[in-house]
Length: 135
Image (cartoon, rainbow, N blue to C red; front, side, top):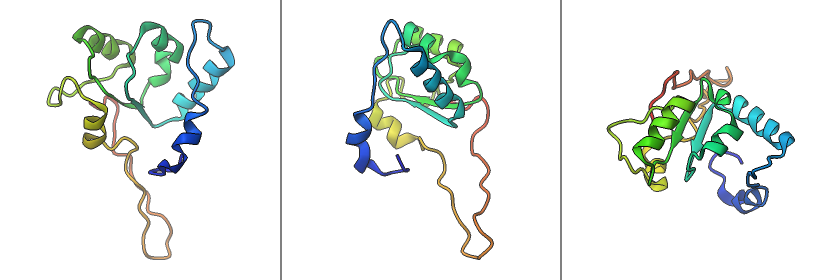
C-alpha cells in the first residue's frame, strides 16, 4: 500500500494468510524475501509464539529496525524476543504498549522523502536508524 493510503486496507486484508503447523514452504520463502528486502518491520498484536518466530526465521531480521506492541507480553517473552530477534525495548516506554500507543509514539514507516524545490531532483535522505535501534 502506498504510504498513508488506507483506502485499500480492505482489499489488502483479503490476501492475509495464516501460518499453519505445516507451512507452505513457497510462502515461507516469499515471506522471508519480503522481510529481508524490508527496511522497517512492525509487529502489531504479534504474540511471538516460538513456532511463528521459527517460521519467520530470525536471521531474516538482521540489521532491521523493528518495532512491536508489547501489550500483555510477559518479561520472559520480551527476553526471548530480545535474544532471538535482537529487538531492544525502550525502558522509557510503557511496558504494555498498545497499538494506539505505538502508532502515536513511532514513525512506523520511517521518514518521508522530501524533494527540493529546485530542478536538481530529489534530495538524498540519510536513513534515520542504525543497527540496534531501540523499540
